[in-house]
Image (cartoon, rainbow over all chains, first blue to last red):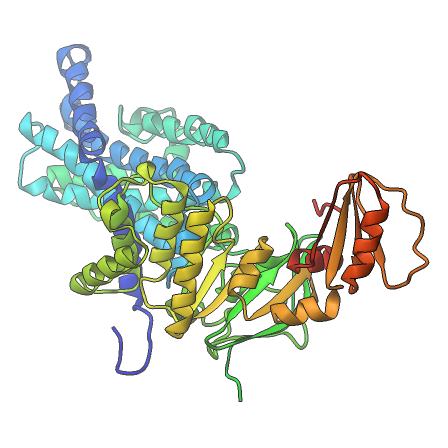
Length: 263
Length: 304
């Protein structure tokens, strides 16, 4: 990077990668305790459905058996949860308790680099977590490879999208306990009202628009399309929603959180 | 003509209603050690953070900050690339070991794997941490953590080293070791900007000292100048609140705190005579030091 005689700081891509690498390095330091649960969680879920609940649900949902329907939905909820935790509790701890960012901002990184690096890392965790679910689904023959190998990419987009919202929330939060409201009030309900557990077409007509507004619905629609390998044109709207949401909320998240890093 | 690494002119910083820095100006000559001294809350840390772009500053008329020819509001990356920062709090990654902590920072400076390894080896050697290369952060003592943070700040061979209270809370051995290392760095051409509460530290390291109080600069000079022009040569410290009557002698200045009375004068014999008259009283006659200057400049009241 150094030109002869002149000093120049690393380019943007290198700076973002540096931030991403820091998070990856810390995460993989405890690879066993960090890397195993993402595989176990869907296993338990599917076991519960396969061994018990599934017997009562014989109706097909959007043309899928219940275990297929739920399994493909879990690809996205796992990405959502991990990105949301990473960029609420994780970010807040790094910001307020560990003071990690204070050290990083003394290196040639801007606050913007730091926040966007954070988002990219959350996206990566989304990718990894949905990959873990995909492995379990594939092992039990719930989805068929290789056509669903694109699913983790949707996991990346979902992780990225939820990281922007989580960081925006974090920019407002003064004590770590406030995140409980976000999870109980917003993230957990999404599990039920975005077509993961049952199709949103079964919701009462007056609730349905709400399901269309919340972000997870669009991720779930996208990933199911990938898993069944059918791409109707209205999927473009879902993709557009995810893109617009990420950019818009991301913009405000960077703007607000920056004020807590450089003030 | 002297070359300045840092030029600060008329800089102010308000946090809402709290004014942290008010109209501060100073210059740091290249290859020197400049000390910012002052009580807690004087604005030292804020001023340092402004220099490397971690804090913004109020944009008023006549404000200039120039660090290597860059303005922190516009070119923070260039400044950060040329500087190393040792913050007040230890902020190492507890999950990683000593080597890994340095390795992730080497990436921020875009050092290649080979460069990074080489540099980390040198720095661990320099700060006498080589044996702790694979130790986890939790196994390190306070002094080792501080040294590791200094090593981290030195990764990119900075031209400017910024240290915020680098030896607070450390034992004398580590403090002297750190002072030695800082002197070596200065000899190698590093400009050093440091804050400290320890007057002996400032005396030992700094070529120039600025004493701050309530966001303003109150005194500036070399350590010797500050002593010479701001304080009497000797002080007689008397335990207890002595009811010494007002001195007729104008060559003696009295400073009372609750449990100690201090008599300042340039005339040591005069103070000796006085002490002899106070039979049985505990007294201590000594040369004045920077701490006396500091207390005179910033007052005895707590600044909290």
